[in-house]
Length: 133
View 1 (spheres, rainbow, N blue to C red):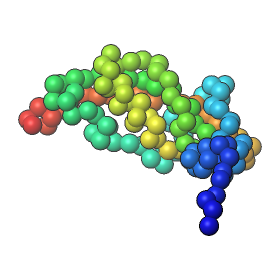
View 2 (cartoon, rainbow, N blue to C red):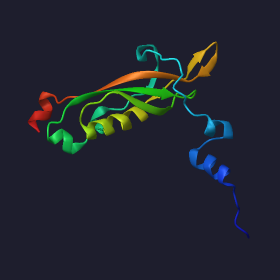
View 3 (tube, helix red, strand yellow):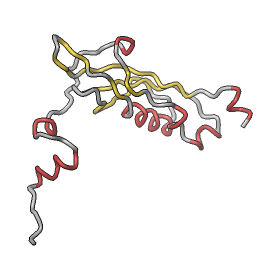
View 4 (spheres, rainbow, N blue to C red):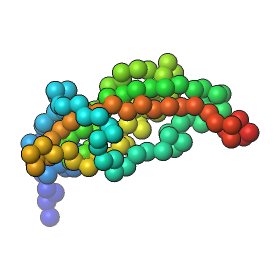
């Protein structure tokens, strides 16, 4: 039996998990309407405790990062950009990973799912319970 050969384009689609070439090649442009996050239905909001780097937390590193999320028609975050850095590289990386884990109910305009952007704020601040550890 001879091995199957796939074109590079088909392999790319398989790796990206896309069902059609259109899905794989439609980049998020940044021209999407910006929707207030309070008006969106969040299907998955990651827990900051799962993303806060242990070393940074032990050292007492705190900060706030604000990111703009670019979301596709399926409610998946495809791209992020910083509006405000936490001024700590490790926290910024954690904030970006956390932002990419968000999932939203698709946003519809006239019954059609559409891309959108929204802004989230990630607050990395220790509580009294954290200081006891």
